Image 1 (spheres, helix red, strand yellow):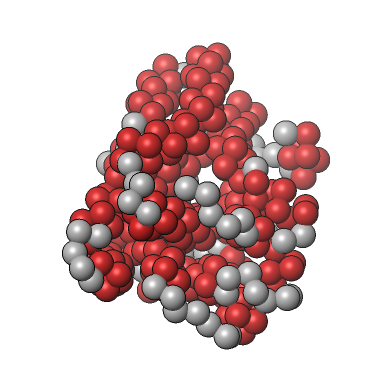
Image 2 (cartoon, rainbow, N blue to C red; image 1 turned 45 degrees about the vertical axis):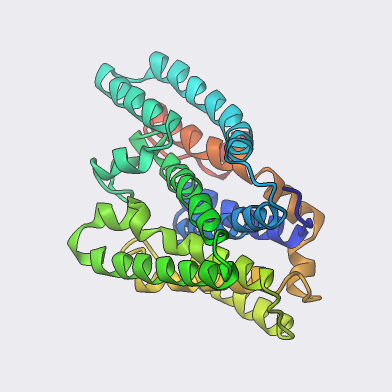
Length: 317
């Protein structure tokens, strides 16, 4: 499962997680910071597909080993957050709020938070801060992708033209999912935001990059690609805001930006170097626990103190 380490991808993770954290704590600073999750989806699609393709090509892929690694990577840190939320909630939350928290702990444990939240109010609802585990919806999307995608790839490997079939599968899922994302923009905001059907295209963007590299397609435009990619991400986190219908047409901007940076293969001497700076990489390496903890801390702070933390309190937190 070991892939060539790319520090620039950890740098991209850092941009993603810090954008989300800043948006949640100080939304006026980065009104589009929530697109960091979309960047995470592209990264996950690329890395997971690369892992599966490498194992499948060596005929060493094991479903049991694959899912075991995913659980060991994701669940220990997640379980600590879930238990901590139950303990803090027991002390500070009202009975009805604690009952709702228990429901979210259950759905978070089984990676179905997106479906649970879909049945409730939207992500940008004015009372969303009262849900300490609201952010786990994205883990649900990723885990549901991990269940389906390996099966699709392994089925493709049974054919002689498996490379072509994998590319076609990527393209088909991308197009259908993106179409669903656009179609559900006006009809059902919950489905549009939380449904895997309207989100898988973002993971497939990363999968397409991995698949094209797997069949030997390279580029000599690394510098231009990564520069354009970082510009698109910068525009996304500063110009997009929660008043816009999202995801949908506009979500292609951060997804394309992240895709271009990953596809550049770290060959650009400017953007990749900036993303590979140690402090930036550090935040990328802790992006998962930082993402897990930042929202429960904010949510409980708002619930207990009836207000958002200021800059000094944020540093203390």
